[in-house]
Length: 433
Ligand code: GLU
Image 1 (cartoon, rainbow, N blue to C red):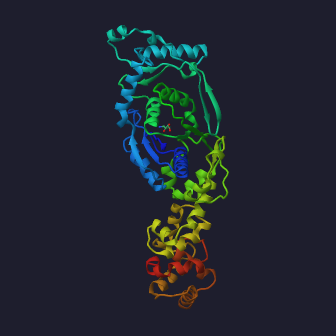
Image 2: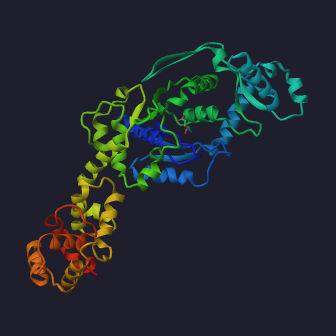
Image 3: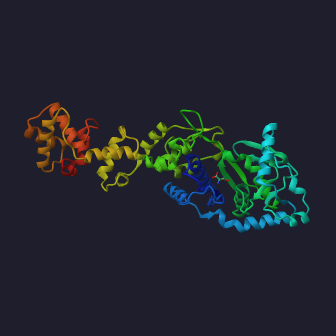
């Protein structure tokens, strides 16, 4: 079983979507299911509705899964297992206050050494614990041996007990910390491979130590994906980069199929540049993903988006644009020379269907052309329409073509009118109104 474990704490980042896509592809390749686990135990950071938004995005990208879990529903298991660890003396109650811990942290910073828990409460007798009337957290004792694991991309890691530390598994309110809930749930859900962002590498030894302490022996494979870099600045795609938000990209008119294609393409060796996720399932190799940061370039995504729009069935494209006529899909594809997103194509259609006034410098001519076209019956070919306008306005050259283009498309430049006309001929009444 694989899992995608987003926290409902903000807009979905493209890095997270990349993690979801890779989990989806690998789950299909291994013929194992994919579970969506909403990691909602950090109540203070949860944002209402973000869980639904994440699920909607996964649907939009056709990432199918076997079930959705909310981590907070597993609270009773997290607590029961903490009790088991305490009974076995593998975990202990820690009464150290936040203030004291802060002081210890400050001291470490001053000394220039990493902060580690000083082990004070580990030595308290059961009697003292029972007689202490103060809130406490539960800490897991650090391991007595090094924790080792191999990451599929990054190779071997080896953490000394000091670096794993005796860390908190239940907060004072008895809710689980991220590492604890995550590790227990990976165990309960029988996860075989964890694919996630590389910011979690240092959590991995803690999560392995938790499961070892609980007596769980199944080995979980780890794949930590490198961060996504802004190709222009070379820096991490942060929340400040608009393009880091999946929602923003969708609103800008990038197709999910193109975004998915691009997120698989970057930092990877792929047999072709343009593909669908279903095709990628056939050749994708998680071990081929680059260890170094994947560079995100919005101009390249625009190119890929054009290719995916081109591949769309014309009726479907027309529906995405708010019509139900394959001619509108064909018309939209004509505009791919100058538009790269659904939003940009929509703007072109809006120009065509807008109410036109007169073209600057050609006021009289525009008026004449418009009047003739308003009285015109249907013409099958562009040549017939053009001849009809020429005969009835006595205009020629640019005095004819400039206003004619303006009245038919709302702008002065664009694809050839002869190419556009077959797709708009049924709408002339509306266009010249
Ligand atoms: N909730 C964690 C996050 O969104 C997921 C960590 C994991 O996949 O283990 O970063």
